[in-house]
Image 1 (tube, rainbow, N blue to C red):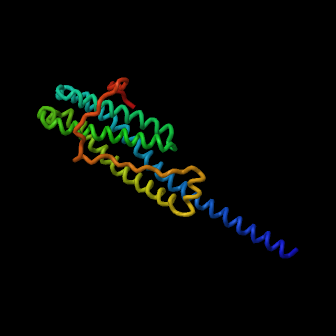
Image 2: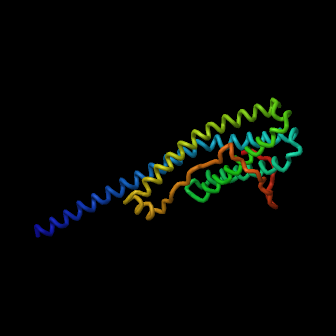
Length: 210
């Protein structure tokens, strides 16, 4: 009888220790994932502001860059896609597919902004316009904040991904369906695309805010 009670006691201790271990792993994963979500939420406001400044830039650029209408239209389309993708992420922050789609949309807008900078070099009046300079300055300031917050997000995401890959955390992550968090990698300014994305049927270049 004493031996049976001892065995039951030992099993209870092992079971309790295992439960504590699982809870500890879960709390670690949840904390790391929350850190990445917090970093992204801090970036949302600046992303929205960049979308708005981009639309303003396009409207003002139309006066000076009439021969570059395809570039401006493509930039506005990419901006609208980034807005829609950001809205989807805000509505579904746990959906990795939504996050990835948003990253691709932001990357497309970044590339078109760099394309606009490239073609505008041939238009002196555009470069000296006070209105263009003001909105360009705002875009640069917002871009700097996004870069800093992007780094914080990537560090948090890398921390989660590293913890998720470690054993035995990976077993719990797979059981809970926790996937790796994608990193944000926007294109470098010195590497703009030479081709202008085609505007497909059904895509609108209408300016909208928010």
